[in-house]
Amino acid sequence: MFDLEIGGAPSGVDELLPGWHLHDRLGLVIDQPLGGLGATHLVQVAISCFYAISQRRREALTVYPEIYAFHVGGGQGSHAAFDFWPARREVILSHDPRDLLDAINDRGITRLVIPDRERREIEFRSKEADTALDRIQSAFLYAPGGRVEDADVKISGNDPRTELNPGRVLKPVYLEKPKTLAKPFKEADTAYVQWLKLREPDVTADQRAAAIARRDGIRVNGLVSETYRRISIAEALSRLPGRTAPEDHLAQAS
Image (cartoon, rainbow, N blue to C red; front, side):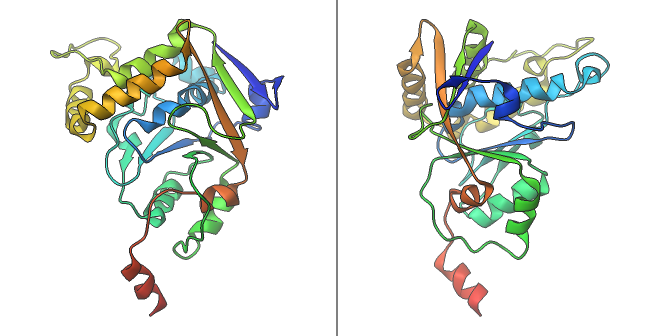
């Protein structure tokens, strides 16, 4: 359902996510309301890799993909429609980038997708940066509007179904009266309904309208192209969003 270009030339998943393996985990960092929508195609490609690597996941098991959304500075609106589910897959964090890296390491993230933010010096807690450098294999920058500057990766949807999940994040879909099914899906799960309602106050009506307008602005004939920039893991760590309080640095110095 996607066309992939790297460096302006047609490419494939093996170049985008080289060496994808059975225990890969994607982490998406979100620091503004519904901002993760700018990385939806990359998330969906990673999901396809998760299932393609194991036929058992497609047939014998009923598992959701190992993907995690990290909300910086509080909830930024549920992205659970992308299968960041169950609710523990959406991690609500403080503004502190050190807490963010701790959470990324706790969940064993191997592919990291972060919003394009300025580089800066961040004094992480002992060993946490090296832990991430040892484990994370790929890192990408994205923009909440779907088009990052100086991009070297372009992912284009070629099937209307690629916009189903973005649409369900912008306008959540669930059953008000969940059903008991032989093979349940999350939209019919009481816990899913409760989670979406719990996260509803994260985003104001104006913020949701702005996110809808951003998506509509890059949609052509019902389809969207998103761009990304590949970066080193060290650079990704220097661009993690958030802020630390001055008193935290004083406490560390003492």
